[in-house]
Length: 189
Image (cartoon, rainbow, N blue to C red; front, side):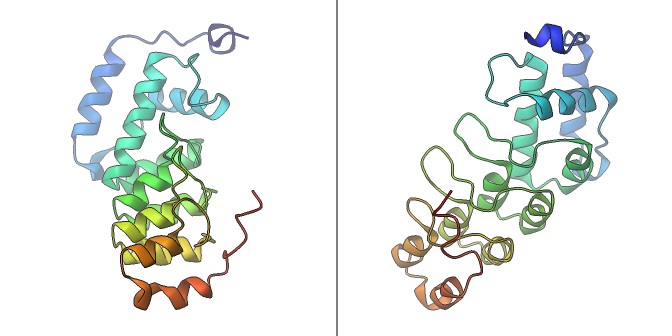
């Protein structure tokens, strides 16, 4: 079924793009999702985000969500996740919203995404986990949040455990990783 058949309103007026740009350039605390944005949430929650059938406006909206994850814009996700934004949505490189938030050091957003069902052990297209990314960036609060969310320190390439050795952080993390409740649980995915 084509996207036109499933979503008869995919051709939204041109001003939506302008409104998106104006909205996302404002400070994060002033952002409110608009009706048009809820429409894109509906589309994204019912289609594969990597699908070539997505309307250009939905792709632009998804791109803005990835940027918001990189920037740690909590208020956007506090609205978008309950409204249907897929917590495990990935970009063209396989980076999830969780991966982007973790890599950029946004522990509160990582916790929010996990609470909405984001997979703590999701790997990107290079086999990297959010936990290994947080170790690489030395984001201690994010590492702790991911471990609390069930991240497996032995999963991925390199695994977070391997990253700890590589970046000489064994003293800080090895014991914590060995006791992690998610350890060894992701390998059977």
